[in-house]
Image 1 (cartoon, rainbow, N blue to C red):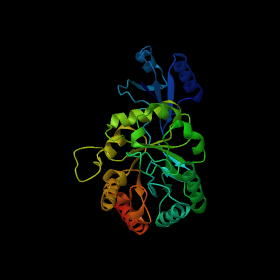
Image 2: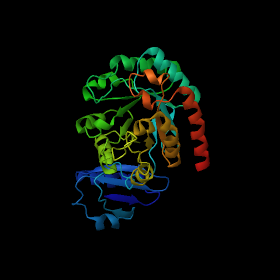
Image 3: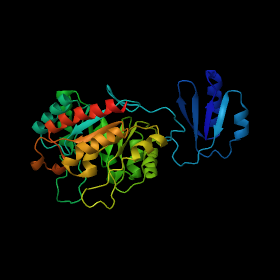
Image 4: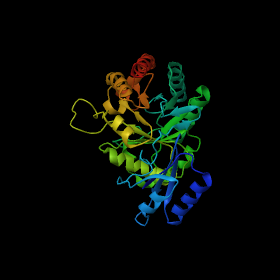
Length: 333
């Protein structure tokens, strides 16, 4: 249920109303807009008399919400959420480019790439320390050592670091990581999502390999309902009938998600296509579609990358792409 208050309501009376809702066993999500405050009631609202609430002189309107996701719903939170990572802002008109290799391989590799992508304009550094691989014989990542190397790259460049967490038991290793990424394979690992709800760090949540938008939003709901509202959604392609590309990049998901949720939406054209030559055109298309940022895999030596070299572009290619991205953003304003 959503309760929209009238403009300039007395703070004490608003607090009394919120306390009453809480006494009914409801959670109350408060969204302070520029002119009005929206109270999102979470829980069993069947005992709430909507006519009684609507009759209060501080209440403008009362609506029941039928969607199963509440915290992530734009109806509960009309204003765009802006997720802050240090000085970097994601969402609400801010555009963020996250770049780096699929896997952290060595100090020289990750520091060199970090410096290159920062010089080109990237806002954050991505790099895999724990790698979920289809084959148990493929490179699984440097794990704890990889996180330490990412921290060295952050110290060298000042770029916040983004890396994937696969297991809640590894959370102590991620205490000094800026953004925790949940990969497509773990999008519905609900035990992990609930644990991340207790972590006061931004969570970059990727869409499942064959996940619907509702399933993605419900996964975000698990994190938010547990207390962490700093969620960034990521469209990374879905498995379909495509026979020449790894996945189908669902760019229509970007404007649709913006309608459904207040959370920022970024796009990963690298994992979506699996081919480096496809990354630039799809990155530009995603930018034109209105995404809040991009995840782009960049490697200094793609043919010899330990993971996903085929989808990685070189630093000089990233620099050219970044200029084109800015041109598309300017043209789209």
